[in-house]
Amino acid sequence: MFKRTILGLACAMFLGTSAFAQETQAVTVDPAQGYLFNRFADNWFITGEGGVSLLMSKFDQHRKLSDRFAPAASIYVGKWFSPIIGLRIGANYMGEKSLSQVNQWTNGGQRVNGYYKQYFNEFGAVGDVMINLTNWWCGYRPGRIYNSSVYFGGGAYWTVARNDAKGGDWENAHNFNTSLRAGWINAFNVSNSVQLFLDIRYSTLDAPRDRVQFEKKTCGDLQAYVGVTYNFNKRTWNAPVVPVCPEVPDCSAIEARLQAANARIADLERQLQDCLNRPVEKAACPKMPLATIYYPINKSSLSTREVNVLRAVASVMKESGKNYTLTGWADNYTGTESYNDRLRHARVNGVQRQLVRFGVAESQLNATVNNGNLTDLGEKAVQLDRAVTIEEAE
Image (cartoon, rainbow, N blue to C red; front, side, top):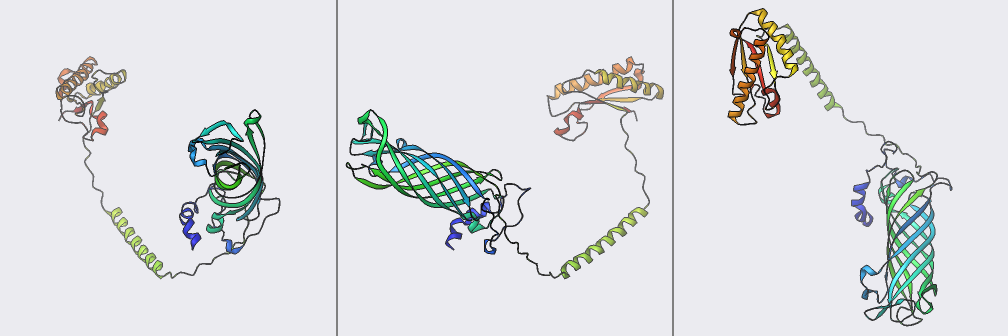
């Protein structure tokens, strides 16, 4: 119950997520069913990380927090023996900034609030037991993007410090640390073989000559790393698949719905046949303009294309001998009413002149304007309202 409470939200966020939708399996493997373990050569990995270290010895709180961070780095090789349990070993480096009451192993004799600055370099061999919490508590899923793991381990560190009494050289600080450590890894898969992660770790260390000369005291060190892991050989796990046969459902409700659908289809077929047998009424087609000439915004001149159109229109007019009404239009969404009225007259007069040039008798043409909208389709169709229409007179 405690485990479910701790990672309930994390499981809800990440359980259903797949990094590679085309390659992942569709089921979550239940650890209770057991695993078919891989060969010893499979599921190996190598990890590199870098970050910062923050020592928390007795007098360090007197030093500004921003001046207490030091670099840290690690490299590991390891193996997962199951989707839940793994081991890794490697090397870890931590820089340590601290304060001391004694002027030895100090950073240039610099003092802060009466204490001497110290800078140590810790080089150690380390090992960890790793537990994948996501696979343990949420079930193993191939291709899951996020995995949360914890680890517990220890190591041994050799300390090197700057000795200002000997010209500031780095030398053995005569301090051998045995360290315990624990951490939390938040890993994100970017491919089948590569993970990016954030590692938060707490380690124990001996602080040399922290209070008075030759006195040692165990203290804590908090670290944060970002890094990358590369997985070797086979990277997934096999598990027995236990098929689940569903219960036979009661189909009476589905049968009733099918019967109702069949009755509805029969009714629609009857209505369709009645519609096909009904006499077709001839609808009167609305009278359409002989031609419509369109203009860009604020334009009343005719383009070469429109002149060619009017040449064809003039041929029809002359052959028919009928009278025609020319109507000038402008949209009512742009410009003032007086300006739009001038555009209407300029457009319709220009079309009339062009038709007369092409031989249409002026007596056949009645030029007028309309201050409404040609289409009434709204502002989205404003280009259709800038026109001159040519219609056969009533």
